[in-house]
Image (cartoon, rainbow, N blue to C red):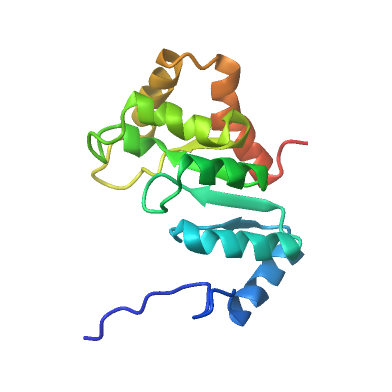
Length: 168
């Protein structure tokens, strides 16, 4: 069996691949969402820069503090670029271990700010905790950290609606 080949959006010179540019044009043409998926932050920067140049307005970074390698300053810059930062509740519900504390939740939210933060679940698989239970747990943490009901609603409902174009 052959080992898997790592996929990347950049070439050996750090430039966006031509085939990725074609996909970005399709995304721009449909006003669709470009999600960075599990790309490392080093690939997200050139991807999102190219995406912006091609007219893509809806950018999403999935769990920037898990796998992606975003620092607080990266999250702040991505938010300035217009990206929304989706943090997964499962990280604060014991699934990922002791690394994810209430303080790390605060740091994640403060990284991009409430206006650029989405709290999602990344759950629902057989054998995992119920997404509803995990949302309740994380909302309780946000309340305990002093976030207002309006801030929590922004992160859980309003920002996802904005990303989907449902905010009008």
